[in-house]
Image (cartoon, rainbow, N blue to C red; front, side):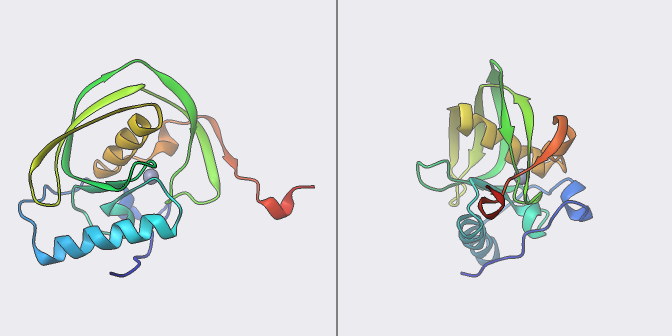
Length: 158
Ligand code: ZN
């Protein structure tokens, strides 16, 4: 396993649509392992393949329940609404207020290409939808209400 470099805002790879994954090759397996490691190292709750420069429809998420992978995810259903702060490993040091559905149900494939249904509310729904947006070249900064806000660093606090 190895850490990968996280691409940041302005890198055009983040604005491109990703390709469907047809089979799990050793290369894809390594990518998934590296993405999980990179997500933990960066203290994130999710990471999409384009964020490490790979245009494949692969996402890893851990909202505190353990890591899972979604390959070729497709949103089946959403409902409700939540408004809250959201950040992205590709937009370091910032957050913004984004309104999204409060519930999401997703059809995807796991690391063995078995079909899985993943659903969640609140933070999990937000993470599912945020990461799937990445696969279509979309970033949360385009959905932010108002301005991006700087994350205050502890050393700057009085
Ligand atoms: Zn993101």
